[in-house]
Image 1: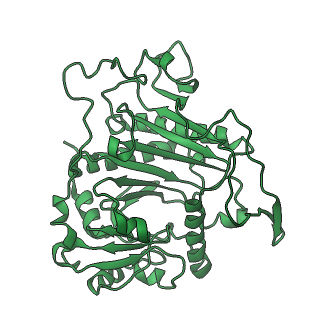
Image 2 (image 1 turned 135 degrees about the vertical axis):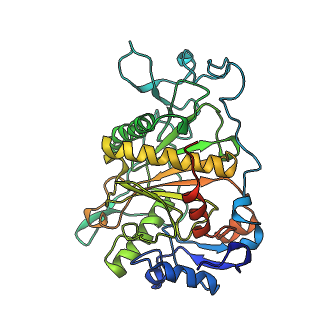
Length: 391
């Protein structure tokens, strides 16, 4: 039986590619639930995850897991009289399209019909599409394949890239999880369509799709929207994630995400996806939604899988909102860089990560790269699994 979180000692859990104990620790390989329990009860280190970092599980830093709530809930745009009318100050609302940056495409594409989703350029982009891309690094032949050679030392390149916004609904009072499963599906398909467009640009190496909900999670607009950045480089965290996955694959011959089988960390499962609280969760009530089939690229998702994912994502966001007092959150789609060698695809598995913002990242986390989580993943998964959002 899992030791209750309120009485359990702190436990160290590592997300690493360097330690051979990953399979026994209960995240990779066969994932025996008993191993996970005994590891935490004994207060010993464990390996887990895909991000190569230590996590300290310290339930003493909170009361009961069910008491953990957001102290900074996001304002509900659907509250108050006239909430369903366009806001005079919101350029994302229907009828205010001329105040936005140029449109890339819309859903449906027929201008004679009201739009449901708009993909537009970001008016204040972090990267600019109107400047010359940086030169590609000279390729170096390694094991018969050409690989880009990274130069040591400091390096600066032009800030070329693409920064887009996906307006998920024309209505100011509707959040993503207020849409039906078909509506969330269409947003996911819009993500995928834009990623496929950006893949065609020779200078774009990676596209990060993400959503910030709430001001403290980075959202500057209350109207429901998401963003994506196409970069001329592969971000270091993406390289680190793939290296972690490769380390597990080299030792076990298995994809780390395909082998997650513990029922203790499972929240929900659909025909195509599993929603879990990862064994080495860096944040309380963090959720990963993982394709059950081995898939490397998010942008290859089809309509059936997008509908399945849309339904599950809607449910997970509803659960977090109900359980945690509508917290600010971020979600990120962790996909695979374009042009990755085919030999790497057996361990490259995309997933969607949801991070509720329930605590502040402090000096320990910033200085050490370690994270403190006051809720054991098994406890968080059990709470979310048993939470009924049907009413």
